[in-house]
Length: 376
Image (cartoon, rainbow, N blue to C red; front, side):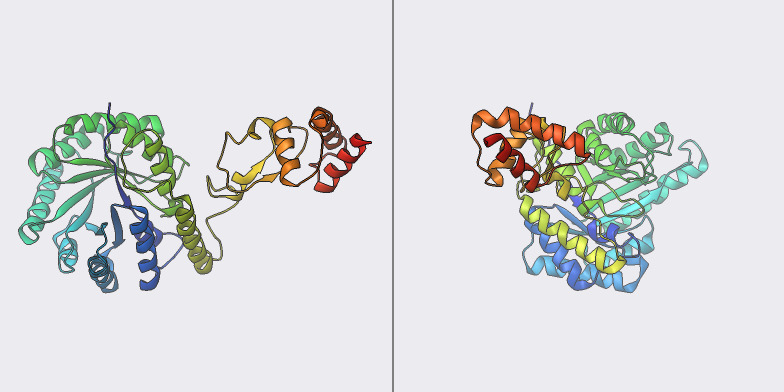
């Protein structure tokens, strides 16, 4: 069965401004936007206009920039589900309008719950009266702390009565596990099946589950994911743009995101890392970063030596007691150490014995010495 299309909203700029006091300049935001366009991002959330006039003007400027450069991606602002906030976006000529509202602890059966839904209705109608071509996304905070039945009532109202374009269900508190996200999104996506409303997912990384949660949300039926470069975002961040996109694409989901262009992704991630390092003193692209970290180049266990695991982006080998024939052969050939094929089992055994006796991985000089001894 053909897998559905998934829209990608990159929150690197807006979420990045909530990471350890990072502030992106206009030039930096422009460069981030260039990467996003080149990589096939669908929507970029670039500003929170109601926070300050500088954010409002930034949104206006970036909308003009994208239009002047004929960018395919759409530029979005974010605000609360208030007339004041949406007016701040409308005056920038925004058509991609994203709002958020807190549903937690409300009951759809009491007066407070009804007032909440009425306020959303007022805001949505206000947007449509001002911007005929508006695409409206409503985030309901938060999927992990809201009663499931209350959440369903809200989704049913937004999709069935108001016909909003997108409903995002964020795990803003970062407490959900992948199986729980899957179950919750599956049930809600089933409710909106056949409607024009897309269900989105936005997961925070407090428990280290954001990327997995985002993927499982899409598998469960979400057709809109909110992610960022290197997962940058408030507190411990959100789902990772590349990892989510690549995982979904490899399972047959249709995305505009060009996950095959790993070198451009590497440039994008390195750029974000440099900015963060300059502004905070500590980077976020480190040795153990999935896919792009230097540890992806290291090989120790013999079963990994045939390069059927990980990404081949240049190799760094550590030969110790766990090495195998594939790994040792690759090491010898890469380092242009001459040997005869029939020597390989003995070389491997000698490396293991020497590593065990020395209590460390072996150096290139150690390996050369072992091969010389065996050649005698």
